[in-house]
Length: 396
Image (cartoon, rainbow, N blue to C red):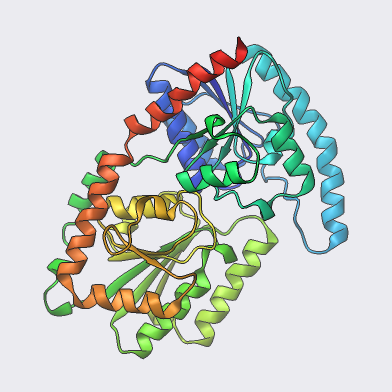
């Protein structure tokens, strides 16, 4: 099968990492794959394409992405007008690439990339729903685009699949679940490298701090402020804890402002001694070996990569029960589910893990086993290749 992944990459976060990994795995299985990026301005993403020998082309080489959101309605309107002109240029450039590559399938994961495509008998368009796909996150024009152009939907989780179906975008037969995959072989060397950092259930007499970790782009929906509230309560209760706060600050004004509000909260509550902040690092795997658990009070998720990674490292996870989180976290078995942003519930779970080493070990082993068995490269590629027969049937 010949596949184009059409991307508009702002930063090398979980979604773009997962797409690139899938592209590489499909190439390894003798498919022809081409990544087409709008701007090529995310250097870590392009470097990874080169490192993994994933073919790529750039539509409009730029140093920075085109951001539509800005301060003030007038600036936003001006940005949209400018972008509409660029959009026509992108359509022409993309058609040249399509004519040369002759894809069977073009996969997009947002309506910005979908908007420069047109229906064709020579290829099919797959919308890769990597979010929870909540109906209220799409405007009228976006909904029209999805219904008009998407031939099939790829859903990152069962929760996303049900949301696509319930929203009326496709029948269940035209929605394929393509979960993320974790390469355990890349994780094992890191565990050996950091053997000096003992798993919590092997730490005698709680002789060190219990290290919490949160990893996500700096946006309100990722829940950093909730994490800080949890940390504050744990400190007030006398728990010996520390927080690794890891994430991307994007080019958008909204992300930068939110990050500044996080710094203000930390300063106001005198939390500096209890927090290490890591900004804009693409490869965060090593940080899981430095932590004891992941806390993830996100507002909305497709199938969060950070949870998969934490579980692959055997780190217990406590998370809001949103979207695809419930695909792989079974409460009190492979991790912990809380009511939405329930700070006291997070505090209770963390205290339980701090003080009950057997419970910590039980969750750790179950989490690792879940990922090792169900979220593998082979499982992901097998799920994707189910689309091939369907595409041939549609073309006939």
